[in-house]
Image (tube, rainbow, N blue to C red):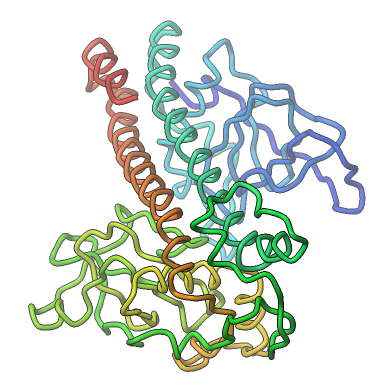
Length: 404
């Protein structure tokens, strides 16, 4: 049938920033939830996609919501399953309905004329259940990783930013939640430094004085075909994370592989573009090398590398980089600049103790990320085949349940 007979799409509603009021109603733009408001325009469940700007993304919400005027939202499901409608829209070629201008836009009437294959309602619900079970597991892993990352940040902040154990010992108290072996590594007083008051005996030093190697990446072209190792680029690093399944490959000789091969404990930092200073600490890498617009920091001691990497994810480091760039139109920073940021270093034994705590969190995060990536790949493989009827539902249900 025609898509317009399956669902009816409607343009969203204007809501200027000055008219928004604090509330819990999600405001959905062409790129997802962008804000909240105290009033809704559409009842849940809702399915929304971009009308111009970002097109091709589809969003599902279980809350009443406000679809912005940059979107199209499903006004009428015509008795079809809303969740199935969401998955079906994810297979639609929106670009075929774009006007191809500098700001891509989707014509709603053209979308309504696209032909889609629609199973009976009962099968729609089963297909939606199979795919959503995978999505739920992916979301659970994402939230679990957020919690694990927050734990690592909290320990670092307490020990090395707020100096809670030092304050406790200075007040004659035992550091909270800390064994005696760890507590004894903290001093009980402060001293002046170039960074202000720091725990007595700690040293202020630059990153470059603590790393053993600073290296620029490989100049090569990326390929979608598996012609060699993965080729990590600036655009692959988002918020200190990378989905290795989405990283392309590159041609490279054996000698260069050894020179540029990414190993656990590496810190890779973007040196140019809008994301200058964006970085990632590498845990459980696949066979991969790094591109020329990245700089690699390596330390002789992996605990030191992890300690430096945690600082490089902090507001202090990003503020330092922003100050170095000075608002230039074409941001870029050389390796020496990126490594010149200063931070406070405790004794090596304390860094090692902290590393022993957080590396377990890092490993769990890595496992969860790999699992989520595999589940996403499975879902994306199943989606068009289930919707087209190529795969029989009964053959997929048991496999999907086993995966989650």
